[in-house]
Image (cartoon, rainbow, N blue to C red; front, side, top):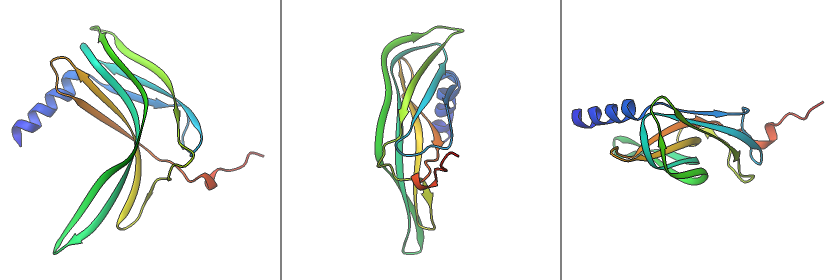
Amino acid sequence: AVTYFIRQMLVHTGIGPTHVEISALPLYPGQSYDVFVYQAGRLEVTRLTLALVCEEEATFHQGTDVRTERQPIAEYVIFSRDDFRIEPGAAFEHQCQLQIPESAMHSFQSTHNAVSWKLVVRLDAVSWPPCERSFPVVVHPLASVVPSA
């Protein structure tokens, strides 16, 4: 466990910070948003991917234990780029469009179930293990859109 912790700490500090910004909140099904991705670090990147991921979570009793299972149920790749270099003192920056699917289930949480959404940046770089960073977002029900006056 200690070795795993140290390895993960080195990956997260050595790769550099990742930032994701969204043009507007809250998010609604069927709407489009501008997304800005920023990745710093001195890296030779083999692939960088930004995806919108929906996960379902179920909590249940198994004997005397309480178990929680989390399963991705949908993934939408927003952006992907292969084979580029991030130079020292510079950063990779990219702006793209995020389209929340019209049929998207809104985020919710109950006692035993939850549906959650997140933006996930996956980074594969030479001499580094794969790195994944998540940024949770909330998708509101479409009925909660307030009509403009």
